[in-house]
Length: 208
Image (cartoon, rainbow, N blue to C red):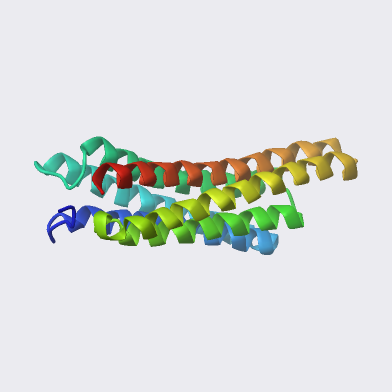
């Protein structure tokens, strides 16, 4: 029970594609943070990736509309698909703001937040690779969601530290405004990963 048939596996394959695209977006963000001089080409890359993520999300929704019996509740499938896609949108927003605001070289804290986003993405990918056998993999899936919660908590600490440092060390009001917003969006991205983890946890509890 709840080890889904091959035809039903298509939803989980599409989920895994979305999760990997989210991780790819996180890696692009991390590359920008580690070398801000490449931001021009990275803006193009993340835009292409966002289109690919939209196409995959559309494929999930189309399949949902065409499938009479689904492997889990329709609202769960719809929520998972959109939350993964929204994650890519959020990362694109961070990179585009850095480009628009000409933020320049990121702080070590901003770089660390981007690393945590990549780490959360890795856990998301691992969780979705296990999701098609919810009952058999429930403990492993929940382990991955717990790791995301820990990473998000670490991100909260770094975010608060960075904002405090920004106000005490930067004498340029415009730079403070620009970086405070970018830091907020980085922290929001980590919050979004925790929301995805909560959704996965709910799905596991429902079907395992």
